Length: 398
Image 1 (cartoon, rainbow, N blue to C red):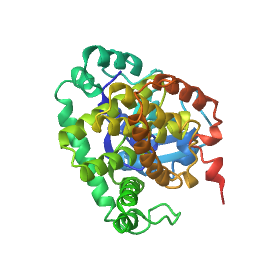
Image 2: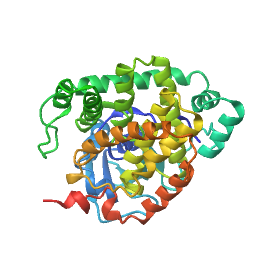
Image 3: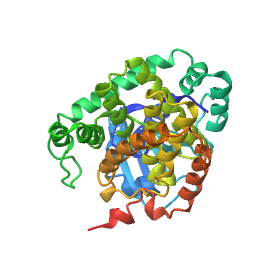
Image 4: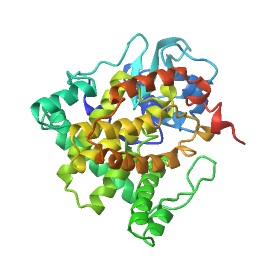
């Protein structure tokens, strides 16, 4: 498995697969065709179907047009075999001849694969790639998940996670101050500030839940507006982990060091899912985004509250299990309805999963790894209508 830095990517929303990934592909192609007179980008499948709502064209043109004129061609009805998020970029000389061309696939979490590559080359630094094996390591060594991360990544991982935590906090704090309507034409108003203010008027338990909602809404709304966020594991699910950690950080006075350890644990669980299945909504539906983020946040909360490795695994397993089958059907292709509210609900579910696991000894029937396998198969069985194409489910409600 590669570094958890690939789970936590700092960038601008609203979508890791439809904004960050295509922007990266455009940058890569620009570097190899500096003298092109014109470029044409053809978007296929899910990238074309929901690209306008995800600002895919805007992200690509921002990279290409300063160098030379660029054109976007939309082909939502064409699905290339490797992955539903496909794009082809062609470079032309002044006489209109094609001088270079490359097909790219945005495979989720901002990652890009070129045509002919099974996966973008990356350094594999984790020898253990299932939670079962990592849990065995924890039990035999008497250490925890975050210590396995430190062993594999080295002490420099803490500087990176500190930067991740800073961006997460800033996204929460910006989001609970912003008001107005989100871009895109749906007329969705920002709600985080209202939830934040309303929460203060309730009793302790209701206040706590209201603040979790507010923090998740804050980050998700920042993402929908194209703000700076951290994928966890994607842009569409970026509000869940920050909401849980920010709430516990401010209400329980956990130290920054413990928050960073919780981030390491959460990243490890997300990494295992990405390696063995997928975190791409276009490939496995929203269960791979919001479901995985809920599992990550549940594991982080359990880590913070002193859960055993078995309890942490159980907490994460429930976070993912109870999102199995969740479809990705954004209205108008925008990361707004139902995405923003899903983040708020999943953040609350993550805390519930932690609490449920804390009452147990960590033993349960279905392992996290088994749920990951089921999620992968379920995602492949879900029709493409419900996997980020805006052709089914909520996306077609008028």
